[in-house]
Image 1 (cartoon, rainbow, N blue to C red):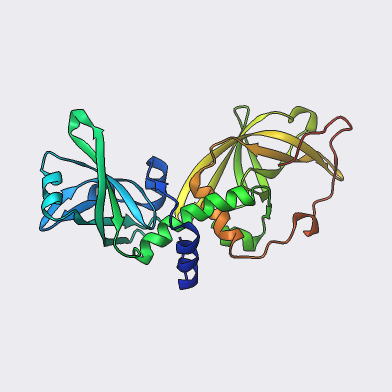
Image 2: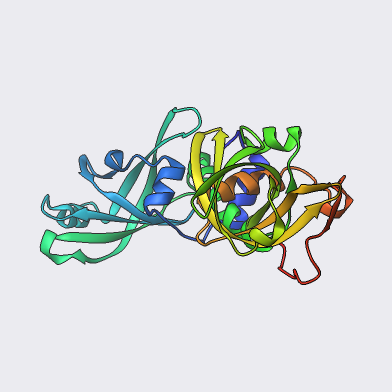
Length: 288
């Protein structure tokens, strides 16, 4: 996540303040949440816990009562604070902050381990760091839903802003590795330029390897060929339309969301096209 303006922080808070983000394994990795450094502070006592979910108004955390946390909370009139710690994936820098709160309720989470889930109502608006980190997740989900079919043409400028290392991507098709060129991408698919004959490519299973440099990460998105176009004057070259399988990696969503919300996108139809011709009269696959 890049540096956010105060206006962006205000927009996140206004639009998403009551929407929860659940810290599953993927969200923990994307946000850089340091799970072993999350602390619930009550009076002068500190209790290790893990964050189950958070909004900009409250958080749900899970902690053991073996250390007497419920008794301590009652003695402190249910006043507490939670220490969040994140490690920025791109820079490796660590950020930590306390958020004051009141415990408004708790329930059993795992009776065998004497674990309880506590609901913490924040006393004030949380720090900008939390709003920025959580807001980027929520914005990516909204953008991927509202603009799922919007294509981003791959150019040197878009590569840089997307933090994609190269437009030359590794593709595995039905177990066979290939080298292809990204033509454009969207939240639900991609178009690739590759060597091949259209009649042998339709409906094939595909895996595309994406390499990013901020943060440095690589992952594979699986999908299926849903349409094929011949490249004019090149009988050996085609443009394949790939439709991704669900779920789409959250990090991929964030990269596209950050790009789409920060630049004006020229419609694909208005961009300089690669001359193509229909693969065949019977090919009616739906493009991504």
